Image (cartoon, rainbow, N blue to C red; front, side):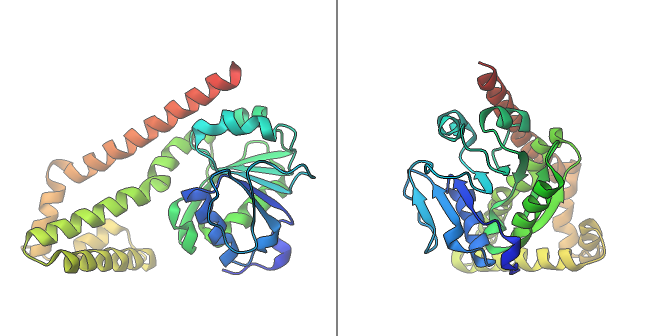
Length: 274
């Protein structure tokens, strides 16, 4: 999705350009954001699109319209002092487990919006959850406009839900990648060449996801529709459904990710109060 130039911020600092920050940056540039409007602040010499300025430390110039905080949560204490005098109109943070109140005490900004994107934002197929307790309407509009070209956007009703959102959609691509790999390995175990099993698994998941996205029915209904009584799909589903094994496994997986996010939030709160 290409956005009109007028909808992009005139200046944006991206603090941290690792996997997720880099994915968002590539998505923005692909959607039409001017590379010259972006300054990446990252001492790790990241690879960025042509025209994007890269600095080790924040420049001594006027604050940007938008500051995107995309470092690892445990690095907040390391980067916050260099940004304490920067007062952007919008601080957009993708730090898992770091609450808006904590962010506001470390990096003053007119408005703070938390975001939880996932990795497919790099190809415009991601999903980003947003929350803002006190942000101005203009800041909310800017935040949504920034992430809309990256894929689906969901505003969540309460900040306490961020741990769950992070576990589901933020960490979710990793779980899906693991499922694709497991599906391929299972195919290879039945005798298929490993490379062919990998191609079949990937194409099957890609096509099934696209079909589910375009259907007007729940995925559970689609699964039952594929499974004829007494057929081979039904036999396989019986294994996944037995004793709620698959649901229990995924519930435990998401709970582990959610609980880790809660731990990170507690660590950040403690550091902010010390």
